[in-house]
Image: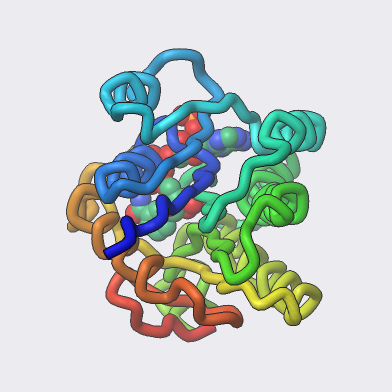
Length: 231
Ligand SMILES: NC(=O)c1ccc[n+]([C@@H]2O[C@H](COP(=O)([O-])OP(=O)(O)OC[C@H]3O[C@@H](n4cnc5c(N)ncnc54)[C@H](OP(=O)(O)O)[C@@H]3O)[C@@H](O)[C@H]2O)c1
């Protein structure tokens, strides 16, 4: 029987939290992973050092178009089966009327504009039939916004989802799988200490979804069980 071919992934925003565990889980499943951080050293580098070459680290400030272009240049000639943009920020539960303009633009630039810029800059690294995915959130679902709170973060994830739909329309004939993923509420710096889940239990389910969806073209907004999240 021929050996299964090695799968390659590029994960944007993997210094800690869900992104770090995602990079580690893919490497644990024998994927070869390039993962980005904006630090030198840190937990991602420690994981890379013990990964037997399956995990390598690149530096990226995702909001910088220049750094995105430089990363694309460094990866010239490489091909990935999965491009996954994980990075995002939250600035707390401030009612929208009290959100300073700078806070609004920071969150929107990081959570909505930059992931799409990353996809546009890096998409040609993805093999035909490969997957482009972004970490979204149930919080970005307009249908499920019935409890109030975290208005700016929710708006940024709804904007991300809308931009991803535009991306999927614009690149509708590229044959690639396009996913928005809701990982569930996890204990991280962003998710807070009272979240019911930890990345070590959520991310293997997310990777199951990524592996199950591979090769199925079109855009889907899915939770960690592979169930559809309503727009
Ligand atoms: N935790 C949850 O409950 C939850 C639920 C639903 C969705 N999500 C989504 O899951 C993803 C990961 O969240 P998390 O909970 O793991 O958050 P986290 O622990 O705060 O980690 C956020 C990650 O994004 C990176 N990042 C932020 N801004 C960046 C930038 N401008 N350039 C490059 N990297 C940047 C951070 O890097 P630094 O270390 O350099 O800051 C870090 O690696 C996010 O998209 C989030 O919206 C989380």
